[in-house]
Each structure stands twice: as C-alpha cells, then as structure tokens.
Amino acid sequence: MPETQVGDISIYYEVKGSGYPLLMIMGLSFSLLDWGDAFLDEMAKHYQVIVFDNRDSGRTKSQSIENYTTADMANDAAGLLNALGIAQTHVLGGSMGGMIAQQFALRHASKLNKLILACTMAGGDCSDFDPNNRGDLLDILFPESYLAISHNREKAEDFFKKTSPYHSQQDGLIRLLQAHNTHDTCNLLQGIKAPTLIITGDSDSVIPPGNSNILNNRILGSELKIIKQAGHGLLYSHTAEFAKILIDFLS
Picture 1 (cartoon, rainbow, N blue to C red):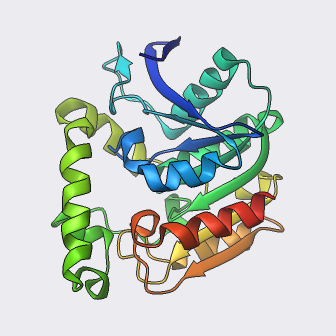
Picture 2 (picture 1 turned 90 degrees about the vertical axis):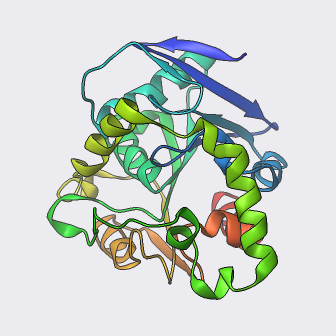
C-alpha cells in the first residue's frame, strides 16, 4: 500500500501515467477513488498524475485529533511532493480541494507551475455559499436535467456505492467541515501568480458559479471556463469535456 508519513499523518497516495507531474486534490470527505477511473485514465495519458487522500479521508491515517485549516492541508500536499521527490507540479483542486489548492499556490509557489480551481470559492466575505445545503448526494451534485435520464442516475448510484465506504465519517468529517467553513483567501488571491484556470458548471448549487467569477476577478490573468448544464459533479457528468479543457490549458 503506497503510504508516506507527512507530519502527523500517513498519506495514502497513488501515481498513474508518466510525463509532467499533475497533483490532484480532492474535495470535502471524498477519497481519491472519487476521481473515477475514466477521468484518471484520460489525464494519465498526458501526465504523471498524483492523487491522494486528504487527512481524515479515505485511507490516509491521522494521529491528530486537533482542528486544522486548509493551509495545513496544503502543507500536507507539499510534504507529499517532498516525499516523492517532485520539485514542481501542476495542481488541480476540486471544491474543497480547490480551497486547499489556493493555499498551496500562496504558500508553496515555487512548487507550482499551473493551477486549476474547479467548482470552488475563496471563502470569507466574498463568497456565496450556503453551509446548510443538504439533501441526497446525487441531487446535490447533479442538475435535474442530468438525473432525469435514468441510466445517468443508475450509473452515479453504482459509482458512489463503491466509493462511499471511503468517505469521511464522524469526528474526521467534523474536523474537515471546520477547515472548510473557516477557509478564507478572499483578500489573498492577488498573491497567486501562477497561470490559473477556473472552471465551474452553470448549474452548480453547492458552490454557485458566481464564486468562480470572484476568483477570476481577483486572480490576475486567470482564465474562466463555464460548462453548460453542469452542476457540482461535473467531473462525473461531463468527464470528457472537463478533461479536454484541462489538457488544453496545461498543454
């Protein structure tokens, strides 16, 4: 099992493909399995893809019971790169992973080539986010128009049945939520100097697309892409389109 000790956690990670490194940071409570084989395989045709389980998620083991921040989680990612002997990488962060990626760009700029922020936000006073957004996972991730097609719902249900046993639970989930809800780079984004792509779905109800406009306005020179008829789960519903946008940007 590929694990490496970074501070107070033993990070579970996987590396696929070859080429220039691409570190991918997953969102709240999900594990590396939630990237899905189709997306991972496509990206691994072009890059050395490094995926890992955040602290309190998946198969990463934490010895800490203290609260932490998205900045601490960015330091975890940098520590993993150090352990793997990777000096510089592209970084993709989705949802909470995008918040961690912002902190990575601010704290570890020398390790970063290009930055991709997907379906995410800056937090603080310049974000539109409802922390009480609850409901069925599929209804949160996908627009009604997508789930109305029967095989789409069935495919998503089957996928998350396989990955949900690795989702964060109990105290670990509470710590992750605390880190998520206290994230705030609102007044720091101008410090991100790496070439940056911001991508969102026009039907994202979890982190509404207006948050991507804010990121785009505050990160100098950043590029914004909006996928039509896509929600927070655009990684799954629009896999090929999402991957092509990323590869075009990174090429």
